[in-house]
Length: 217
Image 1: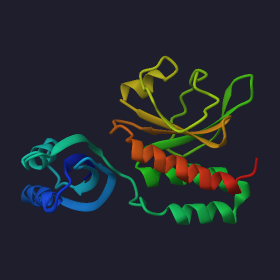
Image 2: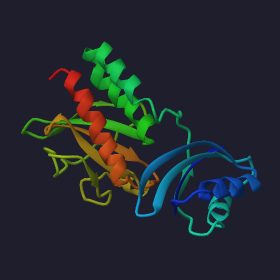
Image 3: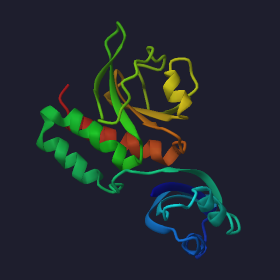
Image 4: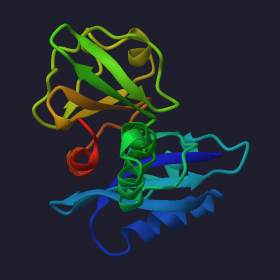
């Protein structure tokens, strides 16, 4: 079974290799490594790890944190496709079919930022309505979020009253970014975490800004 392991580690040569060796000792294979954030001598990395059947995910935490200075932020099952570096391909797909661009983008963006789902919300003055959603997006209706219209990309508090109870129960981390205009917003959810880092939100905003240029109004 595959797991997404987010780790904080000292940003110095050999540390990631030591983590890989520690994981290998418990039979875990690293399928991919994605640098989420780096600065002030610390790196935040996402590791997609294959763990042999019968092994508990807690063993991943124990193994990783056996290396000095390493902390595990989160570990959760991961069934996604490893598409974290296909931004250009997604933009090209949207440009080829702008009439379906919103649907194509919404379905593709969770794979790039390792989110569970994505929803595009529209605001028309009378309230908020769903324009499109990825296949895995929950059908749960939400209250009108008080942050719409949205001026800039941000991390949202998953415990706010507007958040559906089922999302809270799953510990869903949330982030949102305007999609070309403040009254059209891309909302992404990551059930079970980990939290969205500033670099991830910036990446999401940048991608949304590029795609919005070719989307019809």
